[in-house]
Structures are given as structure tokens and as C-alpha cells.
Image 1 (cartoon, chains in turn cyan, yellow, orange, red):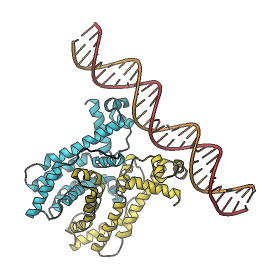
Image 2 (cartoon, chains in turn red, cyan, yellow, blue):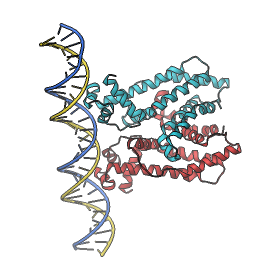
Image 3 (spheres, protein in one colour):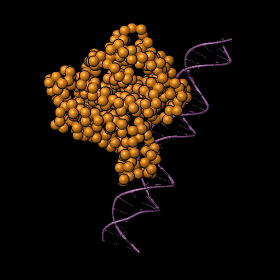
Length: 190
Length: 190
DNA sequence: TTTGTGTTTAACAATTTTGTTAACAAAAGT
DNA sequence: ACTTTTGTTAACAAAATTGTTAAACACAAA
């Protein structure tokens, strides 16, 4: 792998997987096994590396939504696939969203970039239709989306804390998370 | 308010409320309107300030659980109160848990402190009883707890990101969050 | 008034982190 | 072969952040 890509991937691993949001350029370079100057060579500055990683995280997040949510397959099946795909990604990159939040909060993002996800908008419509049909309990589709993402993401994000508070072993916690896909599907469809 | 307390409160405001996890001692001092040296005077070092804030956050988290979860009142009523209390705290300190996670991930916490929450353990038992009684759908009580906290916390934590992805105004988002207390109760009790 | 004690501050020192440069190596193009 | 471009490194410079010190301050007690 070329080093520019290696640096980015390593940064993502530290941020999104290890949850190490305070990583310095030196730490990133060390983790990648490259000279720190290479970071400046490829990205100019620490800040630009962060921006790049940020942008790509939003992109991949949106493209993941796109990939599944536009499919013309029955709703229940779509949800099944979506939960599967999204939870796999969550286990790979549990802290991706946390990183995004932290970045948004730290910079005073005056960014005008349109971040709106058309796929989500489309998904919301589909949910509304299902509610009409009676497949789903009626309500604001946004709450359905809230519920869905919350049930998938939160226990994963909170792993280190809940492990302590509940005094659960790493292995047991993993098992619990693995069980959730099925449970969420059941819960969502009442 | 004495300045030691002021510094702590300000740090908490930056971390837990503003989500500004990268705050430097200077920024904390500025926000508190005190001289930066005072932070060293009262807390010795940046790291000790962080440790103090961390410890108190865990303490207050656990004491909040304690306060409600031990009450000897009917389960449904207890849950009603608990959601109310917890969500109020969430709106005050949306990023408290995020801060804890970030700290746990960044230090290689070899901390031996027992963090286990007895209140949560007690709550888990109560949930199990309710499941026996048939008030709640049977299953692992831990998943019930996961669901409960997820539904409360996640939409709050993700506010800045979801506002963008869903293209929702701050006001509208607030309204949505406010609606959730009732929705969660309904969802939890099927 | 003076003395003592805790608080606050500015100036300084030390450390950490980031950014730059110039030299060197490797690869690609001619 | 040699020239140019691209990649890589170490050494240095600059900036940002943290920690220390000593003096000034406030104010109550002796």
C-alpha cells in the first residue's frame, strides 16, 4: 500500500477503531511505521489530515446508506440487510460517528457543504409508506430512524464504559452485541 | 463560587455540554475567566484536573442511577421517573458519556477501581422479575438496559451529525428529542 | 500594625507538538 | 547515461502547551 493511503488508514484505525481521538501526528506516524514528515509531505498539516479523514468518513457513511437504502426490495428484507451491513461496519469502526461529532464540536463548523443524505430522505418516505400499510406502527418516521440507529450503535459505542458498569468480560460483551441484530429486527417490527 | 469549583464546572461545561474534548488548560481558564496558573495551583497538572473531572463524572453517573433505581415503587412508575431524570441530565450534559469513553480509550486504563454499579445490578433483577410476571417481553435483561439507554442517549449524542444528515433545524430537533420520552416508554412496554 | 495564610498573577522555563528545510534516494522520463 | 520528478529522512525552527516560581495581593488573626 502506498504510504499516503497507509497514513490515512492508520489515522482511521486510531480514531474510529481505537477511539484514540487525541492522537498526535507523531503517534499516527509511529503507528503507521512511517516518518512523521511524510504526513506533512502528503497532507501539508495535521489539520488537513484531519479534514481529509473527516470528509472521507462522512462520504463513506453516506455511501453506505446509499448502497442499501435505495434497493428496490421488500422493506423487511431491506432492513434485514441494512442492519447486517451497518452493524458489521460498526464493529470495524465503532467510533467513527463519535469522531465526527467531536470534530464538529471542536471546529466551529461553518461548513456550507451539503451533508444531507438523499438516501435517508428516501428511506424516510419508505418508512412512511410502511406505516400507511400498517406494517409499522404509525408515528414520525424520523423517530423510527432514531430508534434504529440508536439500538445498533449505542451499545457498541459504550462498550468500555458498560463493560465496567456491568462488570462483563470482553467475550461476554461481544456475544451480547452479536445477539442484537436479531433482537433489533424483532423490536423494530413490534 | 470559589474558583476551584468554578474551574471544575467550566471544564465540565466544555467537555460534557459543548463536546469540546480537545480543550487546553488555557481555554478552560479563559472560559472560566481565571488565570491559567490557578489550574495548576488547585489541580497540580492538566492531567489531574482531567482525572478529577473523570472521577466525578463516573460518581455522578452512578449516584444518579442509585437515586432512582433503588426506589420501591411499581416498575412502570420507576421507569417513568428514571427516563425523565436521565433525559433531563442528558440535555444538560449530552457528552458526559462520550468524554468518559474517550478518556478510557486514550489512557490505557489499568485502573483497578471497582466501577460496577450495584444499582444497575439491582435494576437487572427487577427487570427479570417483570419478565417473569409477563409485564415485559422475556429476554436477557441486559438487552433491555441496552435498549433503554440507547433510545434515550443516542439521538441526543448525535445531534450535530443528524441535524446535518437529515437537514433539520435546531428547533425542530429539540422538539423531536422532547417527544421521545413518551415514545420510549411506549416502545419499552411494547 | 504586623504577621501569617491562602489566593492570584505575570514572567519565565521546560516540554511537547507541529511545521520547514535541505539533503539524499529511488523511480520515471528523455 | 543523465535529468527530472517523486518520495523519504534527519535536523532544525517555530509554535503551542504545560509547568514553575516568586512576587503581589487580600484579608483575617494576633
